[in-house]
Image 1 (cartoon, helix red, strand yellow):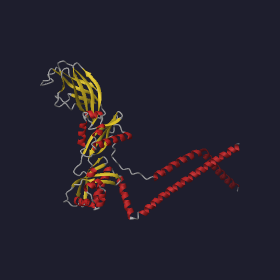
Image 2 (spheres, chains in turn purple, orange):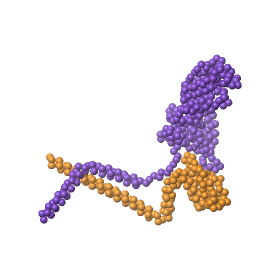
Image 3 (tube, chains in turn cyan, blue):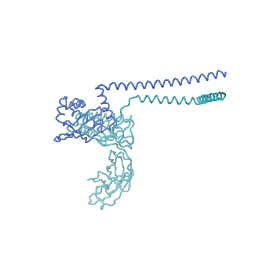
Image 4 (cartoon, chains in turn blue, purple):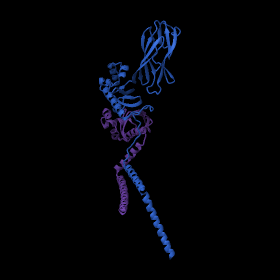
Length: 322
Length: 178
């Protein structure tokens, strides 16, 4: 009997101890448990809510007109993309409506000069050739370098209305959009921008000044002023005897000038002549030009010669760092 | 003083427990409500599935879901495929209704005009071989070769389709009407 009483007492004591232990645990940790529980509750409710929202259909789509194809170039902010797209839309609308003046006003200063010779009639002819009827268009950002955004602009006829019955028209060119002062302008016809350069170098025979360069999407043209310092010698820069009489160093490549065929580039004694040399150079190439090389400068007594190299008083190369 | 302090602490504890219990009750009620809402929708779906219209709707939903998960090129090809299938099954009205409005005005002012064209142009059992899918801005230009799977005398031809996708299985077509 006493044993049973003792056993019951022990059981009650143990239960009391357990209850006390649990109570003490919650006393000491209760606050933390409460906070964790509330956090879990919030997460749970948010999860339930999100599950109940109908899922938006996301289909795969490769058309990203404002993402550059050349991934390694800069990306465009949404606000810039909006401005650029509005400019292009306005330009196309003007061209479709044959509003030449307003369309011409959107063209950059250097494009007007280099492409259209500062003559709006030339621009009109260009517009008329591309817009004989209303055109639809679409664009794709190609590359972005130093605040100049290059897009591929494609003009088509209204293929949705025609279904391409009888064929269809499609024409693409690169345009460039950039800030010119406070305005945003565009260059077209694969031209980008012109930059002034004040680089000069001279020796006993010649003084060469590189005044500017004209940058197209895939070409660059250097504009030179060459002065013949001699009193009685002719300076022959190129007569197309060899392919790389004038060349451009880009990285580890030597690129020959592409406009040397069938032409003589020379300067008479005491005279100054302007010359331009055009090279292949892509606007978004990561390597810059480093040296313009006049590889075979010939000093001649007369321009009447059968072999300008053997008749020359002096033949040397003249390199200008860019 | 000490007794008052002790009473105050006890009261705080009781309040905390009450708050905890209320929070638990709210959770339980919310879970129950969400579950009830879900089961109601399931019941609705089960009830609706007994009608033919709803069966058709379910089929459409199934097609839409399938199309949504396709690649861009496959989607566009499926739209052209659907268009030709509608012509094959002589559902000219459905095919006509997918045409671009300007295109209709230019080439098929009435459904009969379209029907006459389709009957003369397309084979009874058409097969499509897609040669190219080209994106042109917001539309696609699809070029496909069309032949007859049964009639070997049929002269196959190539046709271009212009497709604008407005959404999953929501498209407008025009085509080379020659």
